[in-house]
Image (cartoon, rainbow, N blue to C red):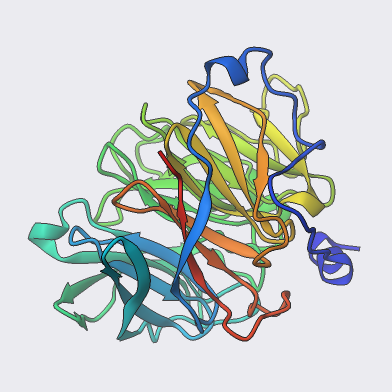
Length: 369
């Protein structure tokens, strides 16, 4: 049975809060003593409800956020409101649709990123599955008016599953793009294919200077389906990755690194491949979005239905702790807010969850003092 078939047949929402993962890799002996400890994470508000598979979230300089919905193709702008010190639901403005997106199973309108020079260029970037491929588009936002999407990188193989789709600007000003192997594992090891890779491009879609191969956008390869990218405060890139039937992964990404799929799942110990720094059993994770805040990586889990808290000491992750386990169902996306807290998006209306009446939701998770 495939991983996806197994998850559909046997997905279990685990209950309890602050559940540690016995399956996760052992941390370094001194990790707890040296890692920076955030405050107690607490859900303090529902930012938005009644959404349809919110997938990408990116904040504008004014503190509002752009949100994509995978299946509806809608692009929303959420403007947080408050009364005194109590956060309230955001105002939701529908900006339009990315009509080029073609939703199907895991495909559709996926990631979004805001230009580092947004104040000057008013540009957004979207990752979408089209009739022909997966494409990175750039779009101008004029007030609350979306311009026409302009494709800047085409030819990323598409599938009904494993389309990757996360976009993240690095501290170097270049755009990092995660792609999946579309259910065809051989593409992950084929350097000529853009599938099963992390790509690094300019805002015009060209291979970024300093890539392992000057004429290629490929930054790393051997990935099955990366749906989470995050930079830490030292500028290091981390990626959360779906395994197949045994191990999900947290990887520290290095240029030119080969992460082993489909030859290796989890830790292989082979010198030609980069091992993950943490692994989880697939029922505890199915990782999607990834964020960095307060010295910690925060990883969304779909099948695991929780938010994983992973303290960092340099390149050494400490022991993961599972938060919100079973409280809100499948968690798709987590992002750091301008105030240093988290927005966490559920994914219970994606055909694999058990939606509550007000799903899908975006929750505000305050990290405390």
